[in-house]
Amino acid sequence: MMTMTIIRKSIRWMMYSAIIGIAVGSAAALFLAGLEYATYLQNSFYWLLLLLPAAGGGMSFLFAKYGANTAKGNNLLIEQIRRSDDLPDRYERVPIRMAPLILIGTWVTHLFGGSAGREGTAVQMGGSLADWFGRIVKVDSAGRRIFLLCGISSGFGAVFGTPWAGAVFALEVVIMGRKITYHAILPSLIAAIVANYTTLAWGIHHIDYSMGSGISSFSWVILLKVLVASILFGWMSLIFTAAIHFVKRISSKLMPLGWLRAVVGGLVIIGLTFAVGTRRYLGLSLPLLIQSFQEQVPGAAFLWKTVFTVVTLGTGYLGGEVTPLFVIGAALGNALAPLLHLSVAFLAGLGLIAVFSGAANAPLACAVLGLELFGISGAGYMLLACFVSYMFSGHSGIYSSQLIDVAKPRYYIKVPGLSMLHSKRQKGRNARQ
Image (cartoon, rainbow, N blue to C red; front, side, top):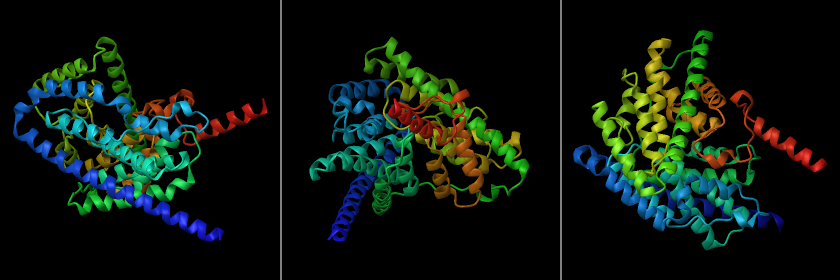
């Protein structure tokens, strides 16, 4: 009797996960198709950039008026998953309106030339749809957490075509410094895989990344070079996250009105575009990302992409951080390649996953991401790059709620698993007192 109950419960959860995957995968397909068209229009009609301040100001005003708590973005999802049952005052509904608002807002950002990504949008849509579905089927608080994790994993997996990385990302980003929720592993993976295939079924295609023949065979010299590059990738992650938090804090202090911040940010983006004399840093910058794997790009490209993205996201425009981090990491790896006498494709690939690893505090997910994007060759180097970058990225991250109750690392060097051990020891001390 107990066995049948377990089987029925398992089948029910697999069905729930698949439903979330289909819904989020379809939403991601709509989002990516619209994003591609918005990028096409931006590249076809250069004058659209001049309307960025007005479009950003208008979207910011609407978001402030109707968005409620959706302004928290990914942090809202992390907070709700990590919320304790004995703290009911921390409960916040993830409103279904988050999905259309973040979808349209990100389209607007890219249509008019803002430098942003797509992961944040897909993840937030996934969380919004998952929480809405959870209210329909009336899951308890533990079930709600799993639903939200499924929303995150399916959104990430669908938008990049990396379901395994999506599942690991959802768990790793949320549980930083905490024990993993083992019951959530299989539902998160099922949701991510179903979402990925649903997106592909709608005719969406993802970029094919390749390190080609540039993957170096093992040697201690190359290992040392990768170690040096990985430390620099970690510092780049720290610079990026610190810069975004700084711009958000200063702009909010100087300009309390959200729509005004967006207007000023848009004007700065226009000025920067004319100053550098190129549009390659607008939008997703996918041509720059692809070029970083093929040939030498301008040495300062990673810095310019950082500046454009920090201004865009720091002044309230909607979109994700991950694709810009991919571009920044790949361009930085490209710039380091001739200095370290390594292949541009090899270091661009390592930079792509390593800078994201440090900024998101998700080294394992980024290592899995590397395996899905580039294959098994060079797996050791990818693992090293992701974990070293994470260790040297400081007590910072693009998801601020992730760091709540996580102790600052000594000398700003993080050791994987140490925060969880510290938390366990602290609980033991509190129990003895």
